[in-house]
Image (cartoon, rainbow, N blue to C red; front, side, top):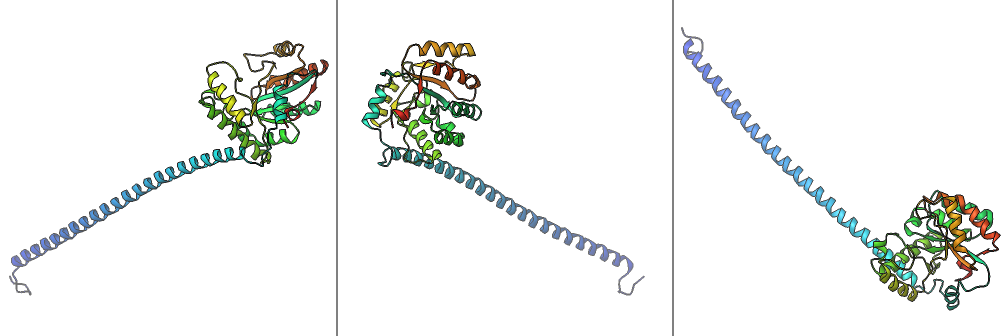
Length: 311
C-alpha cells in the first residue's frame, strides 16, 4: 500500500524512526553543549569567587597590618609627646628650694601628716575617700596608676579640682614591666604624667613626684631602682616612700590591725608620710579613714600635701 507521500507504509515508518533518532540525537547534542556551557560558566564563577575571596583576605590582612602600624605609630607618638612635654619650657619646673624641702621632709619640729593613697583611682573606693576628706576639710596626695587614670578620668579631675595633690605611681604596677630597666621606669612615669595633664586639662602640670610600686628599696629590682632614681632625678623627678602605714594592703587587715599599725608606725615622729590605698578592694580603708584622721588630729598633727613642699 502506497500513501500520498509516495512511500509505502514500511518505508514511511523507517523514515519516521530515522527522523526521531535525528531529533533525539540533535537534542542530546544541544543538551551536551548546554552542559558544557554551564560547566564553563560555573568554573568561571567559581574562579571569580575565589579571586574575590583571596582579595578580601588580602585586604583584611593589609588592613590589619595598617591598623597595627597605625596603633604602634600612635603609641610611639604618644611616648614622644610625653617625653617632649617633660622637656617643654612651659612646664612647671622643679626648683632647688622644692628639691631641698623634699630631701628634708622628715627634719621638722612641726607635727605634720601627709596622707597618701596609692593605686587609684577606683570607681567605688575613691569617691568615698574624697567625700570623707571633704567632710574633714583635709587634703591628701594621690599616687595614681596611669591605667586607672585612663579608666576613671573624671575622678582624677575631681581630685585635682578639689585641691588634692596628684602624684605619679607609674602606669602598669607590673614589676617585670616597669622594672625591666631604668628607662622603662621613666617611660611609665612620662606616660602617666601626660595622661594626668590631659585629664585635668593642664598641659603645664608636673607632679615632679614618683612613688615606686612596692617601694624604692630592696628586692630583686634593687639595681634597676638605683639607676632609675638617678635617671628620675636628672629629669627633675623626685621620689618618696613612707614612714608610716596602716598595712591595708597586706594579708587580711582588720579594723584593729589597721589602727595598731598606724599607731605603732606613727610613734613619736613629727613628720609622717602615711601609706594607704584607694584601689577597688580597699573598702576597709574607706571605712577606717575617719578613725585614722581622728587619731592624727588628737595627736596634734596638721595636714599638708606636697603642694606645700614642692610647688
